[in-house]
Amino acid sequence: MPNSNPTSNQLLFTLFILTIISIPSIITSKSTIEPCSNSDSCNAMLGYTLYTDLKVSEVASLFGIDPISLLTANSVDISIPDVENHILPSQLFLRIPISCSCVDGIRKSVSTHYKTRPSDSITSISDTIYGGLVSADQLKEANSITDSSVLDVGQSLVVPLPCTCFNNTDNSLPAIYLSYVVQPVDTLVGIAAMYRNTITDLMNVNAMGSTAIFPGDILSVPLSACASNFPSSASDYGLIVPNGSYAISASHCVQCSCGPGSRNLYCMPASLAVSCSSMQCAGSNLMLGNSTIQQSSAGCNVTSCNYNGYANGTILTTLSTSLQPRCPGPQQFPAVTPPPTTATRDSIYAPASAPSPSPLHAGGTMIPGSGTAGLPPLGSLPGSGPVASFGGSTSASSLVNPFAAASHVTVALCVLLVARQGF
Image (cartoon, rainbow, N blue to C red; front, side):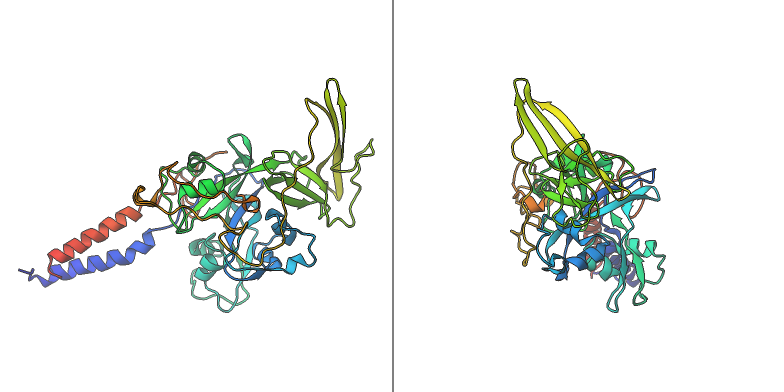
């Protein structure tokens, strides 16, 4: 017989409705942050998917970076005429090179500004235009916005973007860190395979207690790289280039690359070089990027003219001589491609699709070694410290959403209570 107490029924029904309403607000995405205590900056990357067709220059402007830097980071041929105005297709995945600073005790990038348009809202800017790399709450906090329903057209907003440095190393080897927004199809094992990492490494970097990830989470993914050793006085001090890509420096005069599987940064005059300072090594006839090789009974004598940074408008070079057991082969360069016209799952710029969860994997989390994901082609290649939620506390935290399972249980209990009360 149904419970005849209307007050009890109403209270239970109200509890049920309030619980349902509150669930979306407590399920929040997690992001890895890196505490810091100094004012230095480092090179980092963002994984970004275009929300619409955009010119190369428009994407660069969206993040406040040089269009040429955007192209070289994605191994696009910069010698193509008017390449900055090439239209990139919607849904294309790109690596965005950014400078990662230390702000209020944590690593983040605050050099990006966005000018609002008539159709913009805080949510559309965070979720659509910047693809979930920043949250609506972070935008409101960074710009002291109390009423997000009112945005002035043409208003300049600071866009705080996630980034990590971890001393630009991973397991004591050179690395640059990519901030990757988890997609609904992703699994941790798929992301690890996609960027040639191990699940253990990703869990350690992101201080994860389990392999569970959720759409909207932002993972810090280490990418194998070639590091420089320039003096601190150089404007490009700390230059680091992901494996399989390029970087442009010295006012577009020098191009540095990190060849396939290499750890050695190789720099040479850029194809864009027009008016540049001397690139000849003092005391020799060698130009930047050139070397001489002489075989001897003791081994191979190699003399090279190397790039050593850009300071006060001058290209710094050093002449190095070494005796090696065997003579080096031809320099290996990353493959460059023309700018893409379509975005597909097979695109060299898009992340490989993650394996679909199988019935063997509880909760959609794959068991290491039970599945495979395609490794990214060359153009899409993807330390330590306390980790926490990007938008909140700086205490150690994993990427696991603590409310997801609890919210489902709460709904089930409420439904059961309502049913027992005769609804």
